[in-house]
Image 1 (spheres, rainbow, N blue to C red):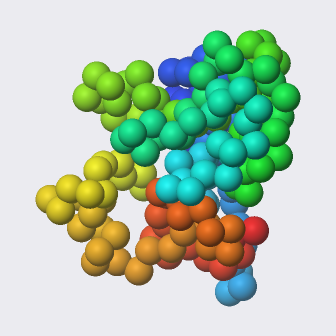
Image 2: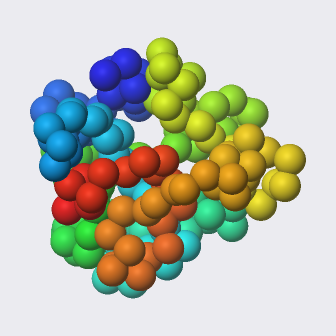
Length: 167
């Protein structure tokens, strides 16, 4: 849970809500697996269109973000997210979610959750870069996405994702 704690501390996330979390799942064979979850920064984000003010948007580099200055906290984007990755930040009165620590990325740093992960279970990089670790992993491994039926083309990939986790 170091990733959860690092995210909360880095982003001043209010107590009781999470930008990233880890779910525990029991496989059909009885083994327990832990699945980190967060905003999937989808290629086709269903949260953008229902936003009445345009506060939710997709940045040129693929990040799906919320402009706090124009968000009215209506929750339309929250309802549209099939991953349950958005919440109302009651302190700020706006929708909130994972930003991949955009403020860190803009400085050339990794997201706090990736940096804090003691097992290196989280890998971050530019999938369009053929030399990147993430690109090599995706191309060489059996990776899965969550909720493929949603047709959002998520940018979060899982290795050995148990079918029990895709709920």
